[in-house]
Structures are given as C-alpha cells and as structure tokens.
Image (cartoon, rainbow, N blue to C red; front, side):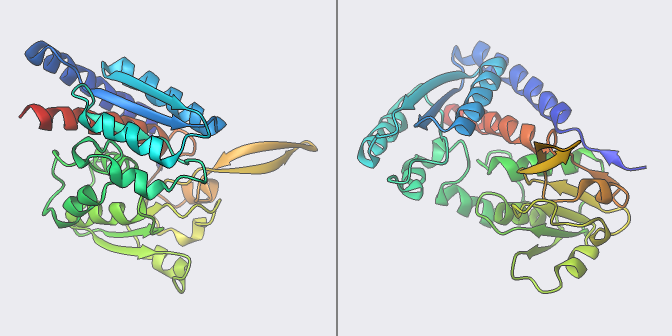
Length: 294
C-alpha cells in the first residue's frame, strides 16, 4: 500500500523540536534566535509566504525583525539595509523574499548577506561548504527545500545508501543541492533536466525520484518503478473545468493520481514539501544562532 508522506505533520514535529531547543537556549543565554525578513514591494504571493514564515517563526520562539520596503526601493538602498542587518547583533538569520522588483539584481543581494546569517542557504560560501562536506553536517546552513526533502526521506526509515536517485531539475535552489545531499547519503545520483534524452527511461530506473522541474504533471505514472519513492517539489497553478466552471488547482510536477498506483511512498501537492521549506528556514536560523554562541 502506498504511503502518503504528510509534510504538514513532519514540519510540525520539526517545529516542536525547534521550540524545545529555543526554550533551552533562552534559559542558557537569555537570548533567542532572530530572523530578519525583508520584503520589497507587495507581490501577493510573497506577502502570503512572508506571513506564513513570520507566524511559524514566532510560534517556535524566534524573534522576527520585519522590513517591508516600497516597490521603488533602489538596489543601493536594499544593499545598505542588508549591510546593517549583517552587523546587527540580534539578527542571526536574514531572509530576502524573492522575487525582487526587476530593477534589483537578486544575485547581488543574496551574495551581500553574510554567510553566517544566510537563512536560505543560498550564499556561494554555504553552497561550497555543502559541496565539499563529506557528510550532511548539522551545523551547515543548507537550502531549505532540499533539506526538507531529505528529512522526509529519512523519516520513511528506508536505507538510502546504495539507492538509485534521480533528481529532475537542475536549479541552484533545489536540484543541485538536492543531488549533493543524496550523494552524501551514499545514493547513486542522476540529475535529469529538459535536455535529458529518454528521460522516462532514466526515471524508470530510480528508487527515489525528486521532481523539481516546474512543469505541471510532467512525471507520468508509468515513468515510476514499482515501489519507488516520489518527492514532488513542484507547485503549479493550473486551470481545470469542474461542471462547466473554470477553477484553479495546485498540482505538482508529478501526475499524482497515476504515480500513486506505482510508488511505495509519495508527497502530495499541496501539503507535502511546502511546509517543510518553512520549517527548515527556522532550523537554519536556529543553527546560525547556535554557531554564533559556540
């Protein structure tokens, strides 16, 4: 029987553990981790994400320092704010909500965040540390979505060592770091992408598939080997017809209904990977605080 991997429940368990850790840290140091959340403009989706991240952070005991800036904020002004946060003693993690307005270079902003306060795990120094680490070090600041995927995989109680893993997607945010994490668990890792030939045949050999390509329902059910584990990172909004009425629906990169018949375990969309991303952001902020007080 196929197991539905409940991201909401696993994320709640992680938040509960972080809340305990932060309670102990507060007792020992009289301080708590601080997360600076920087949003530029009023993109509706960004506002929803920021609200969820802020709410979750406060629930576990993290202090939130909010910076909601107008759309016309210049790159120079934003760099100045990040520079101030880099020096601010009560800030352990800095999150700059993406996307930024078109007149601001996102990579320049992300690179300006101090590596020790890189709550997203995107800074080149942290990416390099992950790449050369011999194992998945608990002290590293790791990109949140792939780390959340790894936590879910480990939670299944399946031996990962020696498994054939296929990561579909090669982004810096998910695909590449996901491959690094699986490699450190001694998986044999293949990265597939839009130019991969016979991609369905590549997927059919996988014991583990992580789909992060950004194409709705791209991974078909018959691409999945019987008993494989499927982690669907995709979040795509599509229009469907229900009784003659057009409605929006969130779907993943995997054709869930068909894949469910083949997989031994699979994440739903929504309610799978999404909640884990936020929980791992809080984890990174807490790790940054711990690293500071060592």
